[in-house]
Image (cartoon, rainbow, N blue to C red; front, side):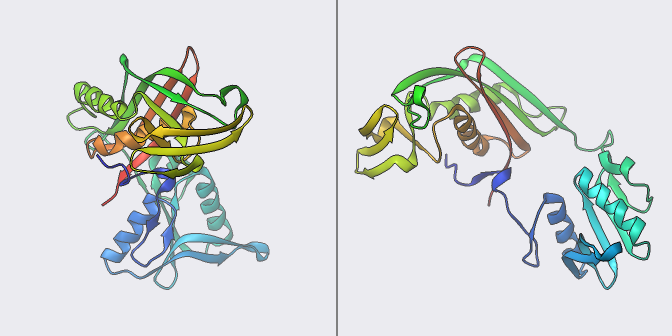
Length: 276
């Protein structure tokens, strides 16, 4: 199954209906709503504060109304400062209920998770059968700059909205994880930047490391090229990219723990979005 259609939150870009690059999903949703109801707006509008200073408010609506999206404590502090220094402005805050206590203005709008609303939950799966064998070289790390291998076990956390008190069936989740691990099991991992050339059957890789110059001819069928070094952290991200397109639409984020040996490893958690 193709993975190029799946991106992590750090890769996401939100373009609003007016062509602005907005910062968050909440801002994107608000921009879509304003456009849908035919309301003109300016994104990232600048306003003056006391002492000749200025700040930016997320949306200027119409001629003199403002909306600030509260996605962080810094946003809440900025909103309070604006209300104190510019009481003449018609401005409201929009955000999640966890910031409501920081905003005293009752006309602002916050979204609360009630018992009848969609809930977010998570499950985790850790099983000895969720493991893969691999070889790699880390030219930038002296101890690991020679060809060597590992057997790594994996724990996966799946986060998403719940339907009938269920994120995903454990059996389905385990099957999906095993399918993803099958794509990387018994493979040699290497950073794509070391690729010198390739032919129909082989990759030709070369690099200078602490142990000397390596020039390897690698079968394509047993080699897995990565966009970065073959660290356990990068492998965690790669497994997320393999898992994401196989997950149902309600899954919002994935966490992958990879154990490299005993009592050490890496954990990556990332929000995911299926494009298209």
